[in-house]
Length: 259
Image (cartoon, rainbow, N blue to C red; front, side, top):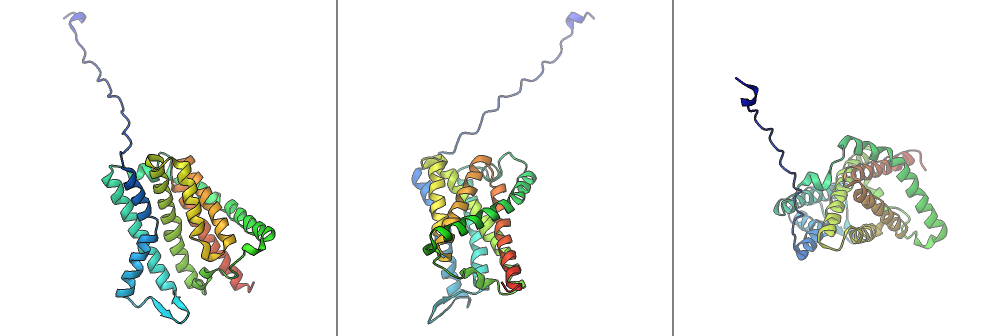
């Protein structure tokens, strides 16, 4: 048999990788979704449900009396409800949770970066708070942070650490990433989303004092920029959660030392 008669099967031609088109979401749907996962509607629903089904809500002459049990229940249920809503919204629009919140960066590396950057954020926040109080002492409108009432013992502190990790660090960065992505897709771009989320994030912390609200607004700006640059919420989520946990630990230490 001559070699010229031999025929070799042709190598398969790899199919061209076609990127998935961005989901077409009506603008009004994007707005409603952003409002729905903001935390305000969900917490209102949860409070009403707890009012009728439990005795966790106590109202006396001084108003609503909040216990650690009530706060923990509210925050954890809110986290679960918002995570579920985001999942449903993404399923309806054909989007991938991994693509929105994790991206293409190695998860372990993002977690490590978030943890290593936490002391820098801690020092930066302390500097901003002290700077505001030095320049504009009138903005220090709350002498004692109302959240300290939930950290009166090491056990309460441990419970509150779990609450802030899940109910703040994880939930709030899921919210931030989702809203920023919706702004990128249908609401004028991520930069506008960064402005909106920064302002809202600060305003919602106003009960802790105007100086604290301004500082937390800067924190929200930082975590929002992190998401925009990394295209992953893992680093900001880790940094946020570890920062909040460190704040609780530092308070418990200072309380134990009597300072």
